[in-house]
Length: 422
Image (tube, rainbow, N blue to C red; front, side):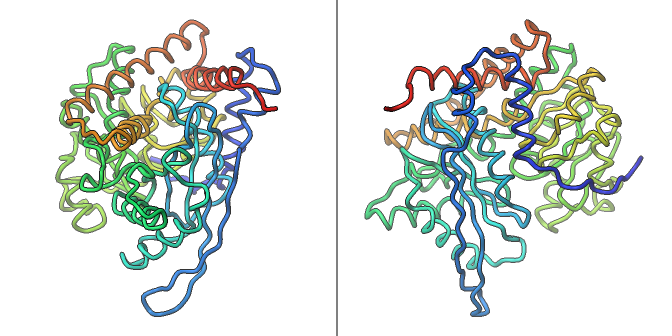
């Protein structure tokens, strides 16, 4: 298998705008409305100090981009990653707007992040960074204004620190200011698994379209965290053969299928995959994307499937667990090669859907059981999949274009109904 050098980093914001331009060709929307709903409403860049464990003071840069709130409060994750930058956050915020509209929940889109390497920071340093970043964002956050959630390298503990800091400043507990919280602080059952479960649900729907049986299907998963790891577990429990799984450093491969629980346990225990312990061979992230498999789940970072490697993808179905893993150039190649694509704004919408459930529970002081969460999530994901599929088949368009059309049209209609004041 080839092991190409990593391509130059693409501009995610330009990619998101290009996707919108392609979809808008098939929509009859007033150009002024289109301009309004594609522009970001607010962008906040903050530079703030954090006291490190050795006593030194270090400056960090953070972002919060609020893209659109026409259909409801801004909603979107906060990531901690050394490569986080403003164009990435702009793209992710826009994708969140379309994502919430595709599954038809009353949120707009936002995203945030801090440029840092959490793997090199202690828990105390991460807490101080989180609380200071929250302080900087206080003017724009709120349960009816902007509601963060976990994203890359953030988790329920980070959300707990954000909620606590916000609550202290308002003089009372405000659980609805974030979602993805620990259960003890008003989090929702099923939230941790929601994105991975949504990936699995939409993969099953895609398999039905192709007449493929999930049991025995060969699945390769790029990513082993809250999305990739959880999705891999669902596939394995359904009888699929997870043949490869990876993290940012690389992964493991076994054509006969991996023991997913053992693989993830190894990752958690040693912070890496040790192939000798797992009856598997080492594999690079680039090689994983080109494996001969039935279902490929890119569930790590954006822009990993490009025009350079799309022609080498041999999967019959791609289910995008990550945001923006496939470039528009790659989309063309994959469509020509008849690869069935379940796009990110549909495939990974399980997270924002259960975040919505959590937010509703917080506002009403309710607690739904896990069966209720799973039932509601399955209904929404399957309905959204079939709505996108219907557009795709009726218009003879790729699934991504169909999903964007559905999301953009819903936001545009809401904007037209609200009008422009004054």
